[in-house]
Amino acid sequence: MFIRIKGVLLKAMDFIRKYPKLSILVTLVFFAGYIFLTVEMLHLSSEPKFCQFCHPGKTTGPLSEVHTWSKNIHASREVKCLDCHGTPGFVGYMKAKIGGLRDIYGFVAHSKENMVGILTRAATDPKYAAEIVPNEICLFCHTDSYNKKIRDERIMSVGVQFRKLDGVVNPGFRQSVGLRDILSEPLKADIDPNHQKHLSSRVNCMDCHLGVAHGGEFKNKVNLERCVQCHEARKGQISMSDISLGSGEKTVTFSHTMHTALFKCNECHTKLFPMKKGSTRISFADHTTDKACYSCHNNRKAHFDCGRCHASVPVLKGDVAFGKGAAAVKFSHTTHTALFKCDACHTRLFPMRKGATKIAFADHGKDALCYTCHNGKKASADCTRCHAKAIAPKAPITYKTEGMAPVAFSHGFHAGVFPCAECHNGVWPMKQGAVKMSMDAMYQGKFCGACHNGKTAFESMQCDKCHKTK
Image 1 (cartoon, rainbow, N blue to C red):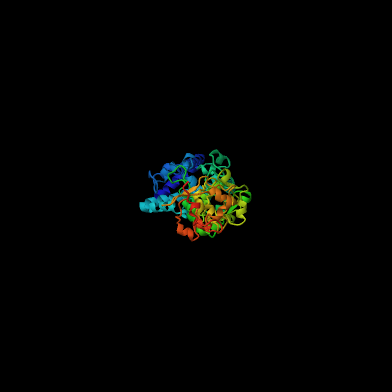
Image 2: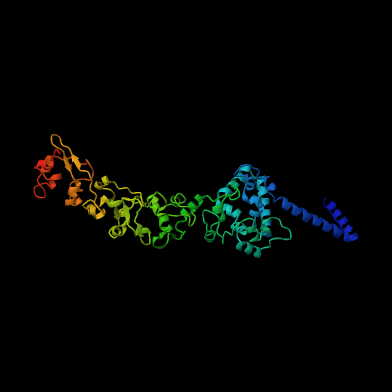
């Protein structure tokens, strides 16, 4: 065998001596052919069709990576396998090709289960996925600053462009496909991710965008649950700025730090609050609904003290009118807030929505609304202190008793002599039929007998004064 090889080499040497120019030409042609075939092989083995030999699946999950890529926005922009699975630059490309040889060896030499296990880990473990697709690959296309930095530092081409990635120059490429610079431009999204802050905190792209190209969707959105899990795990490390709602004296400063120390993120996001700055608008009427802050701040789960949230409690300047005409009541917030906190009334007694409170005559005798305080004990029950004019019922109240003539009680006469508080609500509740009186009780100084005692007014024994046939 050795002798044969030696013989071939000697003949080749003789040929070179006899025909040196031809020998050089043959060598150059051979070398050019080798280079051409190598480049073509590199191109062909970088195409998704080649990758499909090992990833033939047509659903989602392990072994279906080419299929899921084809359904993704990256495929529509002609961003192929090696554009993401190899760092930018010629050296990065060649390293990826050498790594591909190792993958082919694993596919041939090891079981299918072994390959499925590796692909499953890549699809479920963000840290492992970040080793396969590091941040610089994503940032090369999605930013201008990283793109320039990498292009300045690396050899991007050796005269042949092996893939799309190495020819990407921003902002031209980025703008041509409708991308925004994720570090310097606002994004069209419900959530402002603050990419710069996350990158500075050493968060990998795959920590949030796991499965971005292989989720089986055209645009794979970030799973909010991933945000919640990460923020819960890093509560002590994450510092989120306060949020200001409103302006001027109505400004409310919301502290994430305080609330995240007590609650999980998903208790508010996105059930109560969308995660986009400026998207939450809170009106005065919302204060009594189960919306936004008031899902908790309803005096049941948490306080409803305006002064705890508002920089300065915005007191309504005008009076609130209840009723119409002579019976109208003007309620002054200024007077009451000088004596009481807002949560003494809101929302336990009054919803914070104009027109939502309706007060009936029968309510006057209940421990409700104004009469929780204005009951003659905590505060005045004098009708004229609130009503522009105390309105007495026009028709008398008729009391019928068995065996005796009826009694017609005149509010008009009595209201002209005594203030309403003399009787209501101490002697008489303000609800017709609420009590049953008897003559024996009157004789003991109850009901009408409280005045009709022979001192304030004629005594109740003078029956014909009240019990009249006509």
